[in-house]
Length: 120
Image 1 (cartoon, one colour):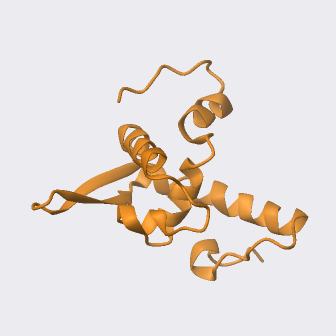
Image 2 (image 1 turned 45 degrees about the vertical axis):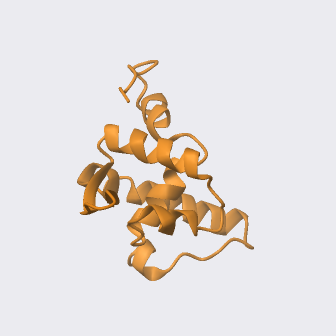
């Protein structure tokens, strides 16, 4: 899959072109929380379908947000790990969590391991 040219020079639009769909940031959330294998992503409560997960992982790999690594030759199987570029989106995910928890108090409170230390 080839990355498309950005639709504009706007950094928000460019970022949304990469991760602004319904699933990419949820997959990235799972990667940051330690999920690595295809079946682990399918176990997430949001219920992503296999074809959508495959497409998102391929798109994120092409965008260098995720690295695909083989862990079995027979049958060929892969695990996924976030790259430094992908991990640089963690503060965005954390702020989205803070915003969601503030304005939608019935949402899950993310674990400290995901959120990191609180600002003083």
